[in-house]
Length: 194
Image 1 (tube, rainbow, N blue to C red):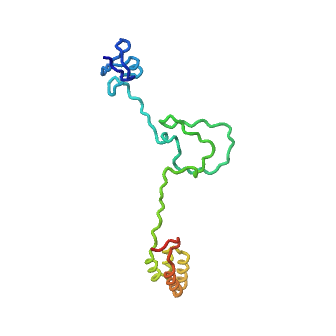
Image 2 (image 1 turned 90 degrees about the vertical axis):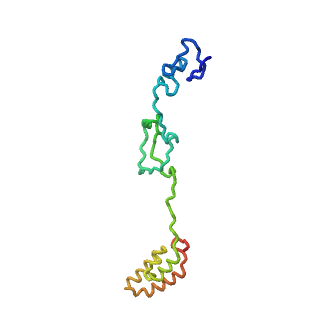
Image 3 (image 1 turned 60 degrees about the vertical axis):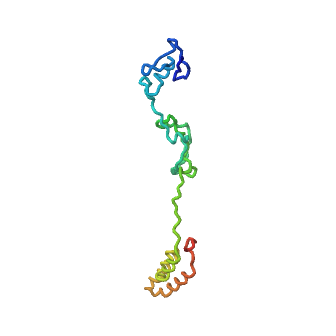
């Protein structure tokens, strides 16, 4: 019965120059296959060749050197005439692949999409009508209800009117606040009170 060479998966002949038995595990190989592999092809055999250096692949190699982060461009600089092409950049460590050459000014940042878009904006909580009315009744002469609703200009006018007249202007500001709490249903951004 003829045996199969584990390297090339063909039958090993019985001829003297064709067959080579592994000194570590005794597995028959073709002499050429044993020499080409540098030792036995059986995993874990003591006569197997030393491990080769492991190949490392980075995410950039897998994506084909696509830029996935936003880069802010440098300040615009005057263009200098290009006389010769610059030398190619050195290869990336461990990949054997050189990065694409950079010629000319950096492209604008708007041309690149960020790797992941995250929505950090959270809409503000809606303002409550009850708190708006209570602030208008008790602190309306100072315009606090308007500051709460986002109407800072009206709130500042009511506050100044009351404070600069030593609270005599509260006779005008407080009724103004009572009218506002009856009429206003939305905050300064147009959001309905809840």
